[in-house]
Length: 192
Length: 358
Image (tube, rainbow over all chains, first blue to last red; front, side, top):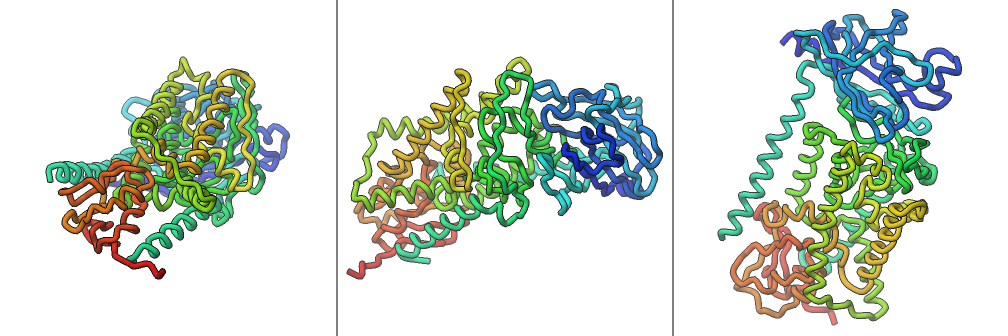
């Protein structure tokens, strides 16, 4: 229960684009080629493992080795584990599942960076034995989502909680009820 | 709402309203790209995949959210977030640059998610939305909402004004059309699933969204949306075949709409997706056989030429899976309440005898 309450977090993510006006810290030319996702983990975030999925446009993330989670405030990379990935048709990464340690810090910003010049330490692996990670998933888009070049830029409110993935299955209840109702009516009409 | 004039008025009003909303609704969101539809360079089989991946998916926190682009040799609209992320049971085309209110049609949904192997649990919400909409309105979506249907009706109006009588298709041809929609749906599903296999992923760039590449909406909707679609890829055999088929399907759509009535509706796999809600959904077409004088006007009026309403002598619910619920039969039936449209058993509108003013 503690986890449930503590883990229902609102995080904000900005997917900052490929364009030269990418809103990333720094102005070096290499930054232009970075395509970061920003997470803001507000107060109360769990200090345990966090797990979730990120997806990318084709040809953007060539390899998971070019990805890193970075804490600009602390000035260090956050160790992350690539739990699984799925490729685009050109071999670039379409989606990957990552795990990393959460934080208790207030409004701590974690950037997921990838692209030319980025060398991350994230490697394929599994979470430590006994780890009970909370999941993050997109909860809703912010009002500021807009096109920047070819990329959507804006805030994503996400939830981080232990059973985030399980909520999807609740849809099955009304789904089965409605389809059952339709089939029952068809059967009844056929008999009539 | 009674009387033939009012049914026709409301149907046309609904079609015009939905056409505007589905084709130009993106203006309401203020998020659409204002530029013309950008080309996505043909990239197969070269590694230089699309220069313009159209978006980082909004569902970046899910496993392989909606694909961010494709390497098709077709022209693609950069995605902007839809206001209502629902795959509506009517032709809501992803290729329309001024769309944006709704996500897309169910055939796009199935093809797209299959190819990217998106886990079922992430799709349940969309499926539920589709099922609820289907339960509520059955194939009224086809008769009253679908913009392709509205174009068909408009061309049919042109034919009437030109003084041509529609063509009576043979039962064999009608049967072939009916079977064709299931074939197209199966084609969309099978090909989308096959190109998801890693060994066949090279074909994704040509065969992604297989039905969409043939759908007349892919050409027509961008035209109405202010862009000129380019369906002219003859760089190799596969895209050339697809290009030819796409133009052939457009020709069939236009010729069918001018020569016949709602011909495309009989071939449409989108209709096949939600015909399951006819005879089972909350909307029903009911007939009182006791009041029927067998005049046959319902069979004559039916644009999809199914005669169950006319031939039925006992059953009250005459909704047929092919019925698009356009209510032409209710509109023209001269017997008071012989034919009725009901919602959850309650009468919404019924046929009525209304002598002509002349």
